[in-house]
Length: 219
Image (cartoon, rainbow, N blue to C red; front, side, top):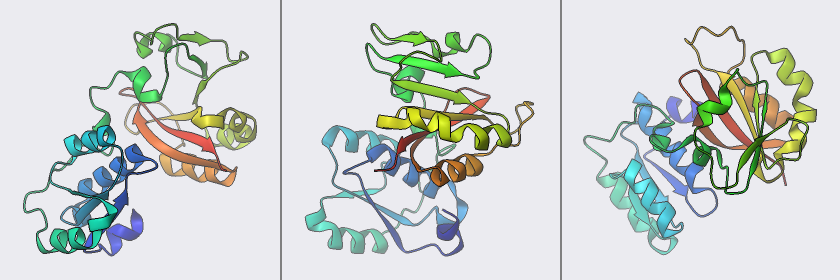
């Protein structure tokens, strides 16, 4: 996003085929930034139900199949949004979504909380059918790792990265202005994760105090 903000293009093309929600998040970030707010956004392909969710968040973007993408780009550039939809944050697309669903916890799934605040299990709210919170030493499908110090993040990333198979690792950090002492930021979490062989593909607001990035192992 830094490069886009410095030199905004005429249009941004986003493929919704592989990771549609990450594509939506990019579109939301583009609209949130003042310098790129009026840049034409063209979403291409994707499953109908996923495309519909993106359209709910960014109704004034352009949606097209690859077979018509050239004409769609020309038309989008010629008719940029005059009053573009501006999300409250890059996480606005998840507003109203139950936290377990937002995190990717499925029926019958097991989630481990590592370093979580006391009573955070209650913050999760009702879990999907037969899903449960398990001990951090137990076998799990999803891990929420709460980190407040860069030193801990760097020291433990290799060990915790083993739980990222299938996109099963969330690295969670305190948001700025919450009063929680921390030196961890989104930039640092992504940097350390990528350096350890992981790939982030989703961001979410966990609650008013915490945000998280979801990681999978690089293929």
